[in-house]
Length: 311
Image 1 (cartoon, one colour):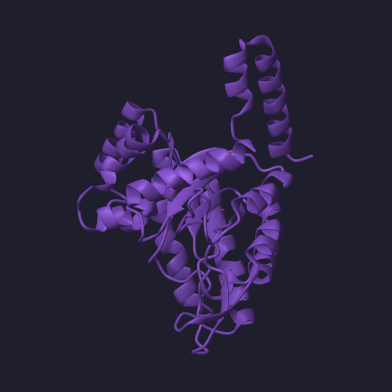
Image 2 (cartoon, one colour):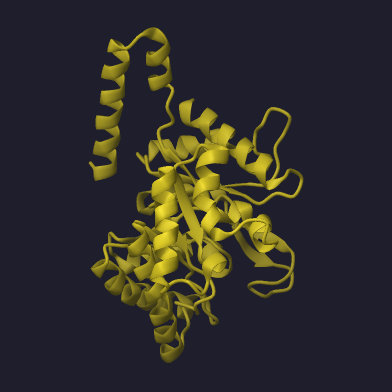
């Protein structure tokens, strides 16, 4: 039995025992808690951040005060030059403490290809990530999310990514930080490619961040990144395959129907798969739609997660 599974069973038993002794209204509320904890991915507010309506330092307070969410996931793009600025990081950390917010992870982009077949290029990319591992440690995060990109054949990039992730993990483990890869395009959107890559790294601290989007494995242009998607990996199959290696879940949404359900993903089906795996960690809201405002999209995603988490 995994540690997370034991924790889940213990937690469930505690809730059941507490509910049995509590008044009916409180007992109902305790029994109705989702089996996971909701976090907020900063990318859900990327329009407001890029337009300078809000700043990265505002994020913890917004998460707590506007949405009642106590766990946050940063995107390094929004404080790109601050990874080694301890004054800035201390200010950010103080704002978290002031608002009762915990830091879960930093999503790292733009620091080079960890799956670059060229050894020198790959080594440089690994070293570029070090400062973000240090920043994650400083902020009390558990994890960094990275990409396993590279230019070459599927086999070439996979072998390179195994090496790059292994090297980065060696550094991250000194800080007690997990390294996880998201299905974020190119080969990483292929369920089996990503699964085999992480399995061959074969470290408990290296895992996957399943994202409910980004499953395109073939485009009409024949290129990895450009053109219309003409073939996708089955998202439910992928998440089922990945959950034993998952250290978080990215709950992506774009549009909702009149009943508040996600149009692109069957959340009841998806969270049935997730619950069956024994997962009880963080599920991050990542709203990317255009029909609703970012604020409404986040609220609708949260309401949907609460509904399926209790079901």
